Image (tube, rainbow, N blue to C red; front, side):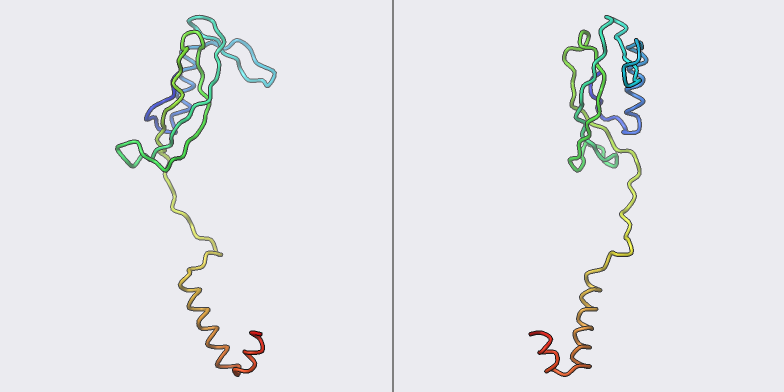
Length: 136
């Protein structure tokens, strides 16, 4: 299996499962309890290779994103597919929620205004000599 090109991220796992169902058969479970697969054409054990998939924004007609890369593993038959393309892209079709502010987020402009007000109140309620002693 070659790395997918322009596939929605939500369909990637389905694509791998379909490839396994069409091209392989299960031989036995390994010591972790995970199935091992063999190629239907030649009987070779299916190997897994790390892919490099650029994550692109679905909102654009062209492939573009912020540079994020994900590294899932993809299956392949070493006999039938000696040259596997491991570079591809997926398009992030999940809705992106805007960042939410927490209770601790402070607007810098409001912080500046509060600081100026506090500074002025110090001079109104305290005399200059007591302020000078605190600043020393």
